[in-house]
Image 1 (cartoon, rainbow, N blue to C red):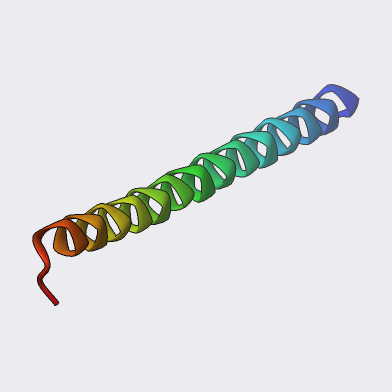
Image 2: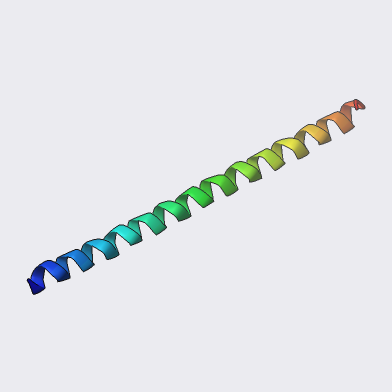
Length: 54
């Protein structure tokens, strides 16, 4: 019985670690998307400034 409890606890630890890692990856991907969008907006604004468009 004790081995089953240890296995269950180990499984829970592994599962929570995988969940937290996936969450971190998701946040990083969202951060990179926002950074890319901001970069695109700045680039577009710079091009409009150079071309004299509004």
